[in-house]
Image (tube, rainbow, N blue to C red; front, side, top):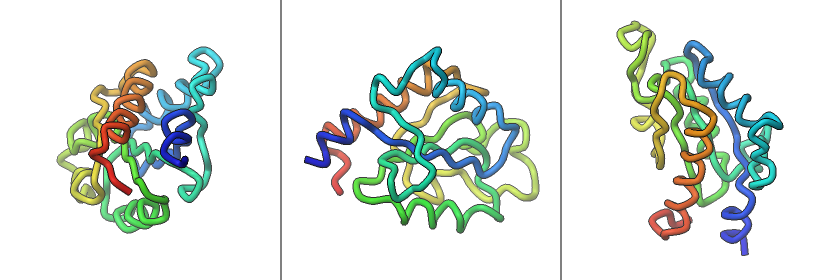
Length: 142
């Protein structure tokens, strides 16, 4: 029953450990009435305990590494993670900075990467759809 609900109404939690905030602005633009993702059941939740998908945008720095792990652990199974933008891949403008720790996938497992600097809202919606396909195809067991 829960699996069917996730596929039809994925609730997301957004975490931005740092960066230029370009991806965060595009994620918020995705949630506006122009794209109307609520018709697809995609709703932004403030708590990771209520979310099905964790959307991470920005660099994984030393200060936020433990926070990112804690947020991931608070999510219920199955845990689906979507990394948004070049910063989450360990690339981008601040990639050579001394505060950077690792790529997001080196801290928590990532199911889908959405490329771009920043990616368009359409690409973010497609990334969430691909994350749901990963779940639906059974490669993500909870």
